Image (cartoon, rainbow, N blue to C red; front, side, top):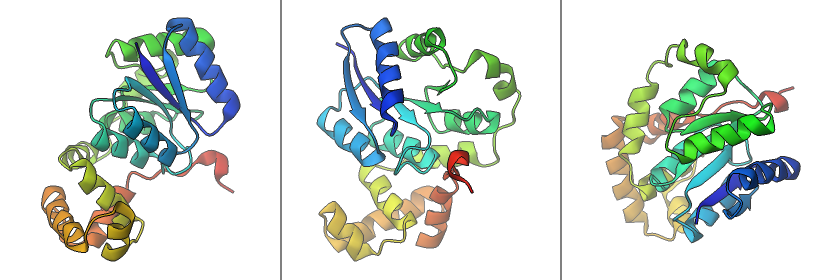
Length: 219
């Protein structure tokens, strides 16, 4: 049985996505989450989830950081992005960091269902009205290289990196992850080598480049 996780902080839109999914897969198991920690907890409990529909700007996700973290921690789970914003550069970047597709919140029911069918069939999905614009957009410099480097991190190393980017100290990271401080230091050494950086500041900056401002929340 197909299992999907709908991750969005707006209950009404989660309902709309649930209805779209039911039209394609009436018997699918659907899980919901309203923030990135909720997504991570749900996937830890149900690692056989087939697809995550992830809001680009949901709480805790920080733009493409949430996508990158899920791809690192659960590489076998497909992730399609959802957003009200249809900037071709952002869509191109999402694909570079492993998104299986990109659904806009402006899409009608038939388009949403077409997108769901595509990503569940392991096909890349782009909104029809944006395909030419996205394909005609040059990749952001360094995105492919950064995505490839991040993909070499183990799930635990990515968790450490994410906390480094938030300014956590080694002891704080160790306490949060339930590991010893020397283990954090060992992870940091591996992270520096895999990412080609020399210190935690550079590592944090590299991950921070994936953060995207939410236009809906800008003053």
